[in-house]
Length: 251
Image 1 (cartoon, rainbow, N blue to C red):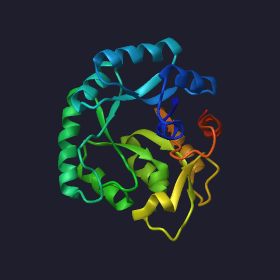
Image 2: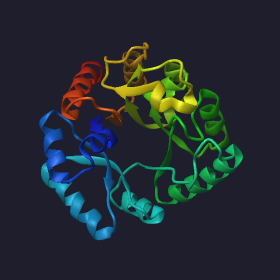
Image 3: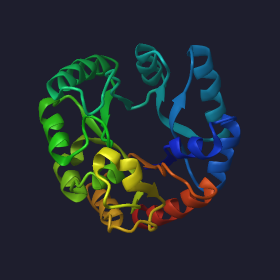
Image 4: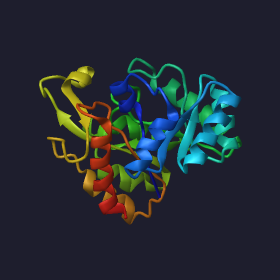
């Protein structure tokens, strides 16, 4: 098992990733094994950044660049397990049948490279609710799940039930806690309804401890990724809090 950071929230706080080496050094110092994605612009850039990871003893779970085909090829070349579905528009206005049709096609092509195509469930996207996630998993049997417990809980989903049902199709997990800011806001305004935070700082009873324990019971031994979309202080402080909490359960 490896513990990593899905570093979107770090980019929001800092304004971007200005130096990959510095970011990796800082995360390694507090106990992480890597970050979720190697972001690159072309093959040479991917190789150069992969060298930086290796030199520092850090790792990544997948890759991404503007070209979907190249992203998949580079991810496969580096021997990684999964790629995110990249299906064009994926908002609430996209037809589910169309979305699933495209996903089936994408998954089959990714499989030719030995890759699993993963769905990242997310508020405000085509697959938001429990019902939508179940529909997707049924209609796209070739697909896997990058299970974001925070987004799922924020959408009213059943975290533990989803793990029980899809344990063998979970390729990666995003851990975060949920803090409700204004419960009068609906999911169509989810950014003002809630924010995501370090584990233990939520205020609505998200069962993140139970989720980690259940994954361990199921024999999950892949990437455990911590993602705090909204930081209110130095991200390294929040990330260390969450990492320590998860290691107490998984290790």
